[in-house]
Amino acid sequence: MRLTQCLFPLIIFASVLNGAEINTLKSAVENAKDEGKFIYLSFVGSDWSVASKKWSEEILDSSAFKSFAEENLVLLELDARRKPPLKKLERAELQAMVIEFDIKTYPTFILLSSNGLELHRHGYLEVSAEEYTNALGTLISE
Image 1 (cartoon, rainbow, N blue to C red):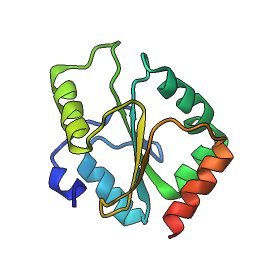
Image 2: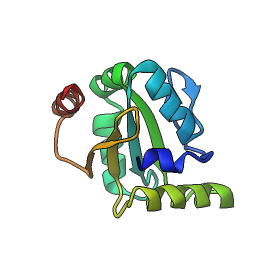
Image 3: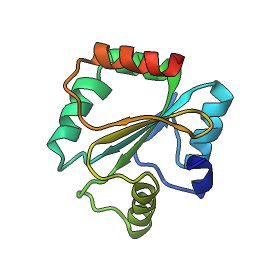
Image 4: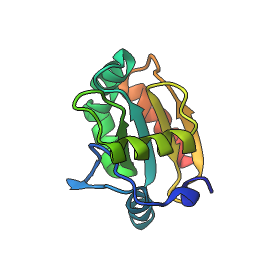
């Protein structure tokens, strides 16, 4: 229910689904439902968090993850970057998501069902892209 309680317009930074920008949480939920996909929330600090950068390079940018994501996920990256500074509205929207999803550390990754139920959450893990996509595959097939 958490996700459906927070369906106000929300700018999601650098979020892409099949080449189209997803700029609201509501549209991500709609797309996930329409396409039978899961929602992958990615809370990162791209220009200040070493673990966020490492995870992006090793997992999110890998061909294994990209292929898995294209088939199974709606990706939403919420980037708490410092440069360029977030605009006031962007900062407020990010803070609302951080509060809503109780984010305590960066990076944090959350897998949600298409109806907004949280299935899994984790921070940085020492795994290969193949191991990670296999684990995600197991989670979404249960």
